[in-house]
Image (cartoon, rainbow, N blue to C red; front, side, top):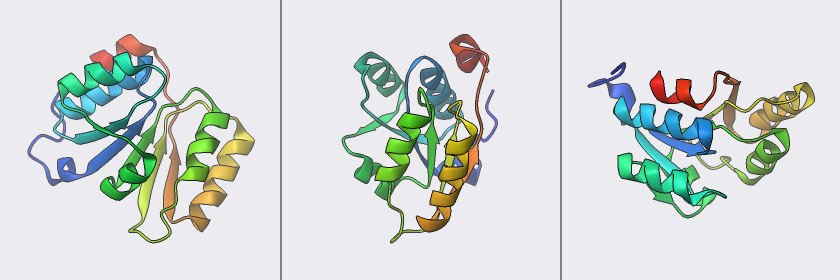
Length: 139
């Protein structure tokens, strides 16, 4: 499915954090539709290596990712990990960014992330995913 092929939307750089079972399929679909996707190594280097073979670009630091990317997609294990990432990101001196959070978060954390977005110059969208890694690869 080539949704945005040859569209100016695929000129947007996407930073993807959480390239695990679900994230791997999501990154591959983004690349298939023409987006430039940047990833950062995590606990499982095998999935990072596989998406790099598909065209993902690995960055060494979160700071590098904040400089290169307009959109960040998070697909992390839980709210605690999301909070660590969001507390490390600082977009104060940059153009407004978008964080799309596909993590299944608890309600209080989502309220915290939304408040943090106002202070640190980013838009926050909660978009939890379900269906498993096979659907992420298929659709």
